[in-house]
Structure formats: C-alpha cells, structure tokens
Amino acid sequence: MRIGHISDFHLRHDLPGTSAVPTRLSRQMPELIARAVERLSTEDLDWVAVTGDLVDHPFDDMHSPENLARGEADLALVRQLLEPLQCPVVVLYGNHDHPLLFRRVFPLWHAALEVADYRVFCFYDEEGIGHVPERVGAELEHFEEALAGDDLRPQIHLQHYLVHPEKNEGYPHTYGTAMRLKTALEGCGKVRLLLSGHYHGGVLPLAQGGVYYAVAPALCEAPHIFRIYELAADEVQTRSLQLL
Image (cartoon, rainbow, N blue to C red; front, side, top):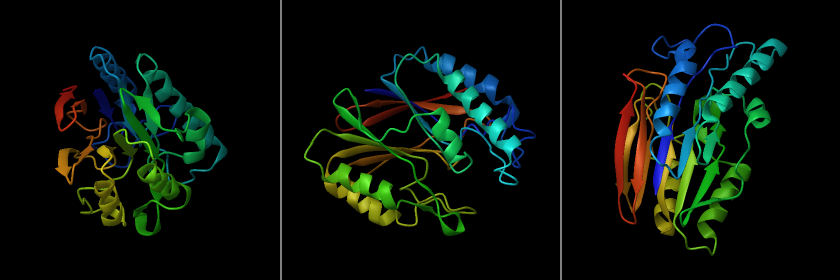
C-alpha cells in the first residue's frame, strides 16, 4: 500500500492576518498546497492522510460571525485545493481548526475506510485542560471497539495528536493518556501504523511493539515537507518530499 501524508497547513486566505508564529507561512499556503497536491498526484497513491490544522483560525474572537464566515471559506478553499487528488483523501481537524466549521465542510469518517486489505480508523480528538490532548467519550469508545472487534485485518489509525513518541517540550503534543493508548495498540496485534500531525518537526516512522508511529512535518514551515509511505506486512519505507 502506498500512502501520502501531509499535515498542518495553518492556512489563512479569507481569514485576516497570519499565524502568530512567523515561520508558519499561512498566507502562502494556497500556492504551497496546490504544489504539494500536484506532486502527490504523480505518485499512484492508494489514499492520502491529512492530519489536521488545515487553517489557522484565530483564537481571539473565534466565534464572531465574521471569523466564522471567513473560517468556513478557508476550509472550503482547502477542500478545493485537495480535490485534484484522484484517490480517497481522509481529512482530520486539529487544534487550530474550528471543529463545528470543519463538520460543515468535510465528512467525519466514523466507519472504517477499507483500502487494500487494511482498515483505516480516524479519531477526532481535542485538547483538554492545559492544552493536553485527550481521547475521551465517543472517540475512546470508537478506539476500544476498533481494537476489540472480530475483524482481524490490519489497521491504520489517524489522529492529529501524538501517541508516541513523547514530544511535550514547550507545548503538550502527546496525549496525557499516551502510555495507556500505546499499551492497548501494541497489545491488540492488529494495528500496524499510526499517522499524526501537530508536532511540526515531524517524526519518521518509529517501530514499537509491532506498531509504526509516524508524524508528518508541518507543510506551512520551510522546507515544506510531506511524505510517502510504502506499507508492507512487516515494514514501512518512507520518502520525504519537499517544496524547497
């Protein structure tokens, strides 16, 4: 199976201003996403994962009618930019997206996506107290049901946040219950690959307990990296592509 993985656009086009972090090139993202999609389109991919932070929705006055309208327009622009991809595209929201606006523009993948004898599960988690990512409620039930089901086909899990490795320097990127989640993932014997975003430096696939954990770098920051994974039964081969 060949998977494209791209993440963390932090786009602002209709939304005013730019990201508070200068290295995040929010207003250049329409052009950069279009270039990345053009490159991905040449790769004969089975599917593409987009693991959150599609836009950079302002936290100040985030629910004002003006920002809601502009934020929805920017999410619609991201959807339009992804449309040239001819394979399934699975899109998550991140902590910089507005979850309710996301639901207006993108579908939520509650059922498993079946691709090439794999089952792909998406988890729409959010931050809790102190910005610590958490998996609770319906998402935790979804996770437990996926691991406990009778279907023995291998699984791939998508989430914005990190289960492994721990990357909490300066900001909590990893779930507060990461060890519990990791133990469950590695103990069930069905999960082969986890794809995450959120941590802008990215992490190449790390094998732990039969599971590969991979984090895409942020496309919004130079050199604007995205990745291709070749997934076989017992290994993941990775190619990193960049726009600079």
